Length: 239
Image 1 (cartoon, rainbow, N blue to C red):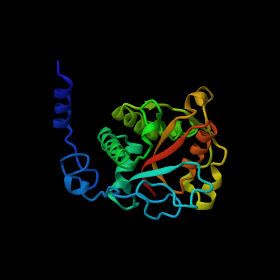
Image 2: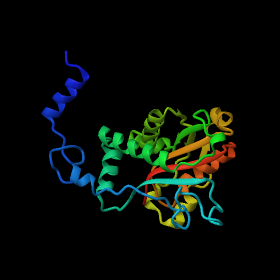
Image 3: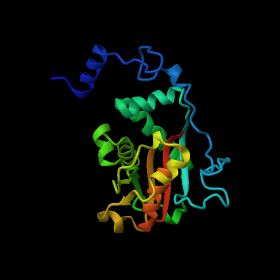
Image 4: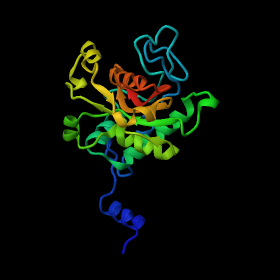
């Protein structure tokens, strides 16, 4: 009987991995194409987008925002290799891409997350995914933010909590910027059974791509209404 490692080797022999960008037989992304993906070396104010080392708001920029910090991993462009990775992760769910994304999420979090030492402990940091409506979940089959969050929490030995739920609204991708900002208002809530548990905690909110930050902000609003101490949004990229 084949062991797990031998079985994986056998599968790779029968179905060799090809780069999803150029088609070369090497890995899900060949070394040359992987070098084209730029990891963010500094963060920006989520509002005005001025350089901000930890992704915190500039003075005066935090008004109407409920989260405290936004940490991004990649520079996102709809025509880059990264877009192909995201599409393949969302719609084909390639395990190797998930591992790659999680490793970068962990690296960026450890580099940019800031919390006073007296309030930082693994017991006080909870990893929460951006939720997906039941209708959308039926179409997608998986909440990919949840998968990222679960694996991220496991890597850092942090508590994972699928604490949020949301009403179905029109897909944000189909809307213009102004409409995105109002579409999700009062549509995301903390599940009743987690409200007391989250109080006083520091939340790492995981998402894949943020654009206007309206979804992350609505999630953060619900979390702050449950008296969480801080919300750090950790996302792969900003569109």
